Image (cartoon, rainbow, N blue to C red; front, top):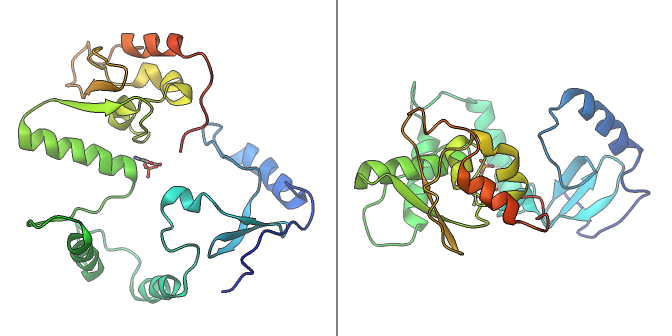
Length: 223
Ligand SMILES: Cc1ncc(COP(=O)(O)O)c(C=O)c1O
């Protein structure tokens, strides 16, 4: 696929195609799914994304930082096509496959450090964050982790407990979050992942309430 690598508007933004899709979305998609832009993607290549109305934009988000090779690079597209023609999914817990091992080998090779490395592949950033904490707790026997104010670690429960963004993340979800230790410095918050005790499940932890009150200006929507 090719696409001119320039911004070019074909009409209004959002155009009629995006507005119609937005209407369908309202009927079908949960309100909690936030989106930064009002347009709907039709195609993308390199650094440019084309919406369903033919408007082309330079995409500074890049899938929020995960499209390291840009949109639809030919070798990646070909590799995906080749793979889906062989098999889509085996679940590594049922039957292992060679691409899993090859990715692990590549990550071990390019990860800095001259030491023995092993890789575990997971589905999302939040799952990676959760596993980092589980592995560190198992290895060290220590229960707490230190996270920073304004950090974003994902939307699963432990990842949320470690997420230091008040608006909207902490405010909207504070009653579901794990209890933090309450000890806090201007730059870092100690978030204790909890054992399932009645106290750990109590709603609206003190630290979150205090944080909510202390925030005057709304922050920008999270990454
Ligand atoms: C630093 C960081 N950690 C965790 C996550 C969560 O990743 P995911 O949305 O794939 O669960 C993100 C997502 O933007 C992130 O930027």
